[in-house]
Amino acid sequence: MLLYNTKTRKKEEFIPIQPGKISIYACGPTVYNYFHIGNARAFVFFDVVHRYFQFKGMDVTYVQNITDIDDKIIAQAMEEEISFSEVAAKYTRAFYQDCAALGIKPPSVQPLATDVMPDIIAYIAELVSRDYAYEANGDVYFNTSSLTSYGSLSGKKTEEQMTGARVAENLYKKNPTDFTLWKKSKPGEPVWQSPWGEGRPGWHTECVVMSQKYLGETFDIHGGGIDLVFPHHENELAQAMAISGKPLANYWMHNGFLNIEGEKMSKSLKNFFTARDILEQYDAEAIRFFFLSKHYRSPIDFNRELIEESHRAVTNFYNALKSVDFLNNRDATVPFDGSPKVELQSMEAEFIASMEDDFNTAKAIAVLFELSKRARNTSLDSSDRLAAAALLVRLGSVLGFFQNIETRLKERVQDLSSQLVELILSYRREARERKDWAMSDSLRDDLAKLGIELKDTPQGCTWNLKE
RNA sequence: GGCGACAUAGCCAAGCGGUAAGGCAGAGGUCUGCAAAAUCUCCAUCCCCGGUUCAAAUCCGGGUGUCGCCUCCA
Image 1 (cartoon, protein in one colour):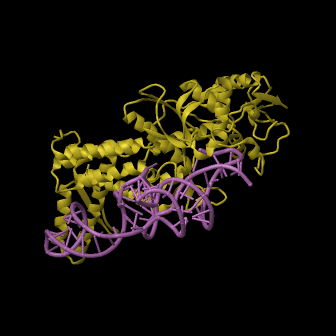
Image 2 (cartoon, rainbow, N blue to C red):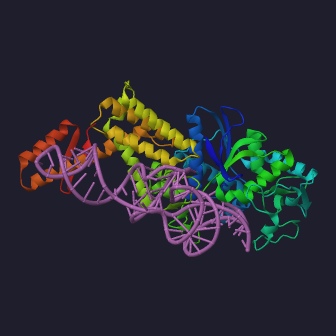
Image 3 (cartoon, chains in turn yellow, purple):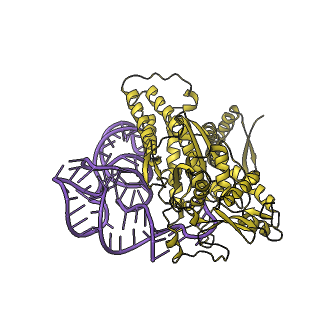
């Protein structure tokens, strides 16, 4: 399998540390608000990574942090006039809900930053004692000039960084790129006791601590959005290198950004959408399809027409399943023999080959369409069609489709039933306008036989199901 | 100022040196009482200019354009 490694800027053969076992850490949310549609892309993508390795039969440990202490949480607490912990609890709950709505499989572990506070403080203390970090005015900073490898992940060199960069002025920093490990608290802010007085951790240490706690000193894959390469992941790596002298992860995977109609999503442009907003309007699987129809490293442009098109595409898959009455036949023994089997095998192989090539989901989806086409092909015999449908569901599930196959196929029928009744009632209304009472009564009696009771009122005809 | 990504048909999109996957939309044929479904067929030489090569969308150089990161950010 090939993975693009941000560290080396090329695709590399993926070799897990332990054969058959995969350790993944992907950056989760800072719980200061509902997460947005761009975050959703990252979460969905790493969900597919998680699912694919499981599909391959590997033992996956997938850790996703929840950062529940941060400046932004404190700011949000002021705005909502509740405590920082209430803000964190509220949006952590929302995070779980929205992920579930997107069909994201829960990671193996989702640790909270505030649960590992003693570990974070110990980690910073270790950095200080080894002279990789220094205290200044109650804050603790990581000294980036103390580590020759600093900048190796993002390819940034410290000197260049200083030219023209909008680095915040800070009197206490020795180098402009030095980053805060511990922040002295201001009045009214949440505090933890530390060797440097009361304060709270900076942004990057919690991820090093949590990832190593659950996955070990060096693990297989560290992931997140492309914007996290610098400074977040660079700074995580720097701390790990300082302490252990070993890389934090062997492969660094970063997904591209999501733009809104060609522009960067931002609150000031008023094109900021939370995943919640979008989930209210569109089907989760359509959203997943939209994300996965483009390679994860490319930027993707969000607009309504594309989501609607994605919805049609997913509906296409479900129509294929309906055409073979999949729900009633899914357990039937499907005899495989002759060429259809060979073709299905090669389609599965193509799907896998696409996924093995740095998660080329767009190409993998093309295989799903081939299978869908095959399942609908009335010139094939039903066992071939059913076999194609079964493979469609099996492979589609790797991308997180077909999670609600029961309700999806059944609800449609129920929706349809009431529409059919309305349709029949409209014919009956026409008959009544013609004073064709025989037809009218006959329609009423026929519906009654199906358990549908009609009531004619001055306002029109209503109906309900008899008990 | 530094770093990086991308540019493929009306739209979305794959392609990683051997002569352009797939989806949406569109055109035509078969089937059909008419439709629909199904099925068959058609629909791009890859931003521009040079270069390397027997061969380039794919490699190299130079343009042009779009976007991103360097500051909180998936």
